[in-house]
Image 1 (cartoon, helix red, strand yellow):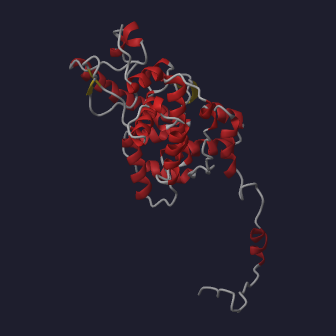
Image 2 (cartoon, helix red, strand yellow; image 1 turned 90 degrees about the vertical axis):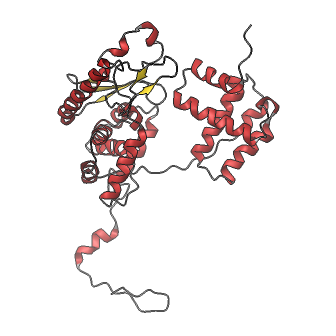
Image 3 (tube, rainbow, N blue to C red; image 1 turned 45 degrees about the horizontal axis):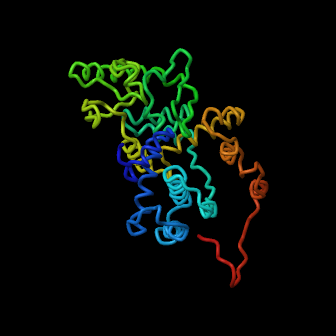
Length: 341
């Protein structure tokens, strides 16, 4: 009989049995490790409500993390006790989630999108084009494979997006040419890798066993491959992963600084801009919901905040009187600020 797994390997095993994404698995492992260190390296089975509450309070009060970060830690601990340790103590349901702040998304105008994109270099520029043109998240764009691009149907298949869901979104006509030229360069790299014995690509889930030769086929390489190869720890093979997120994030950040944009724009701003501009063009919100992959339309509703001037389409009184040419003067008085010269 095999010895029982230690806690962290057990966490990873359960996460993979439940088909959690690798990013979720890593996040949960980090939070569980932090909880154990915070509690004096005691095993979680020895801890209860006071220790868990103290840890979550420590994150909010002393570490001053955001509500979203605190709730991620909360979800990791629920996963630990319910799924890994198989326990459902009464106090678990008393843990309160942090109340998040609803923030309006940063949306770029069409001119700002073009300005930011125009100062970026390749391939980050093409990644930004796809995020804005197709409403993709950054990681969804970087994990696209050649087979996910349907040029004849002008559509892109997003595999295992947020929540593990597949969806279809549009492939802009204006990006067909740039993508064809980019893929020609990627294919040349792939063929050179094959010639050097480095051409295998990591396949999703169990396809490596089912289709052992598929990792060399042209349909599987990433659309945006990394510049370097890596050695797989399991098979020992040299492979080429997709471009790292930080490469594009840094490129967008530098482009925003270079053009002097005062908005706090990030990679995700391209997706926000896609949704807002799409709604502004008269498309219905349900279509936008499907293209973005939102589970609930209420999430998509946040993009309606910029569809009309003044938030709700009302007109400011100043806009009604400014054309009258009234000579506005500030009265002089102790409580009034003088008009600047």
